[in-house]
Amino acid sequence: MRWPWHKPVRCQTGVLPADQAAALRQSVIDSPWLSDTTLNMRFASTWGFSVAFRRGGLARLRKIFPAFVPYLDVVLEDGYNAFFLNPLVIFRGGQVEAHIDCSLRSYTAPLEPPFPGKVSVYYAQVPDQLQGGQLLLSRGDGKELARVTPVPNMVVQFDGELMHQVTPFQGSDCAELDRSRISLVCEHYRLSDTLLTRVPDFHFESSRQFGEFFDRALEVQGFGDNS
Image 1 (cartoon, rainbow, N blue to C red):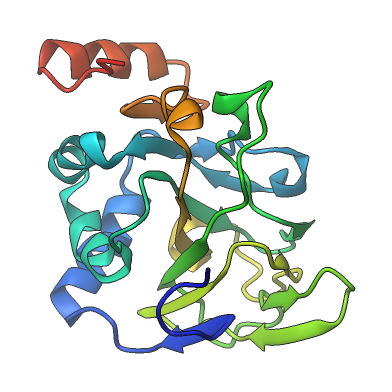
Image 2: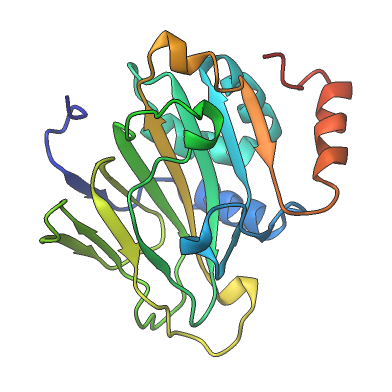
């Protein structure tokens, strides 16, 4: 079953008020946990961090990442019970190779989860005069379905079974965070009880060496994983 709009791809611009959009963007740029991606090799040239969570962990997520809350309020829908959230930073020359999202696989293995019901992508920062960096979406037969040029403060939502990629970003020749292409991606899942028990209520992951220290800090503050 598709999500309520009954369209495989939907774009919405001007999603957040200006102050909330600015706060979300700055929270990613200023994050001490932003580093080389924790995702697979298709994301090798990107930066980010990730949070896997169930409905029970949503309150923790909102408290720890308050700038993400307005975005979550827009994209979260009833009927989904597990999520994978990650900021995605692409610098000049970077790209994301063609793939279908299924990031919760590492938690449910050896059992295979279904593909996400939907994927939501919020564009927090898009460099001026962007060259490349488009989101390409296609069906299983390889036929291109949509080609989206990012716009700041836009959300793109699409069926989780769609193949997608980000074309090489050839904009600014300065590999700095404030000139990068920044998006916030959320995969939304409907898992069976058997699979859902394998997903932590809240689990943060970063390639920063002090990631374990962060997990410990969450425990001390009462936000640790209780699964």
